[in-house]
Length: 389
View 1 (tube, helix red, strand yellow):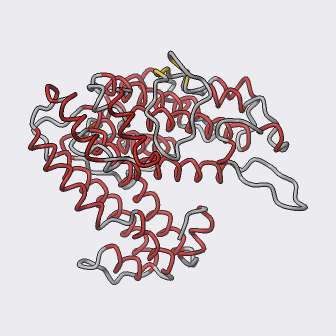
View 2 (cartoon, helix red, strand yellow):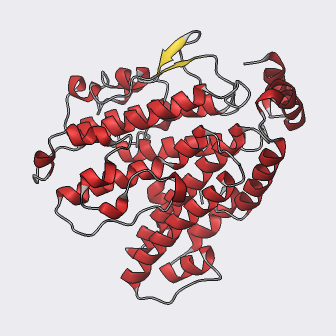
């Protein structure tokens, strides 16, 4: 990390100092700016959207909801719809999905040539949609699931569903056609290897696009992305052992062994890796966790992500809870993105964080929708998510 940027982060007792970082950014990456006006416009627009999003202090009203119609009026005050329960739930989930996509596209369209990193970040929903379609095809469903409309950035021809070859031929997903597609249609087909391969494919290309950015544009992104991949590996390892009863050596096959330089930016509140210097594997913590007993809390002591595990309860027997850990990991990445969003304005770092925040908001609103649809109150859903109200 450049010395001026480090000093800026350490000013005010470790709190971010925006102006010095802005000046540092302007000096160090002026050659990489295709159009400073585009970046300034994109950041200003992103700030406006975030100000109206259910992020930070604006999350709390969601905890006071008791019905889907209340949620509809809160999120879509101008187009709230009077529909019966089940119809409103499905309709709301679709509108929430499209709302997120629309807000992200509004920022990417601010660029005459959007950075590849941001396009690939947006296309995470295409990977999710494709996974869902594969499950639908396997189950023999003739109608496709609800899909994200990412416009010109979409590569899969979802209109060809359920013809998988027509959907993905000539795309980066064509490798799926070399799999045993007949076996995929059996009721007991294990999607774990294929979904793991898709995850590895996504993050490999995302990291490649990250490495093409200037050091200033990737300063904060690299740290957030490294932590995200490490945590996803750990979540996957825990889920495989708990829900799928995989042995440690079996679970290890599905981890993403990505490498990244360890000279990370220091972000307040971030949990530092134990390794320092050179390249580190983002599967290190997950591999370490495979050696810990799932019902012995002391085994996990001093593990890097220990603080994100479910707590021990007096008089109760502790067992590692994948759902709790996954929610805690999501909140951790959300907090990192929220802290970094305004730290380096007019850089790709800020727009990357913006997209992260919008994706978190979508997950939160979808969870609230599903909970209210089951008759739960908003606060009860937050309790299940271990989310602050």
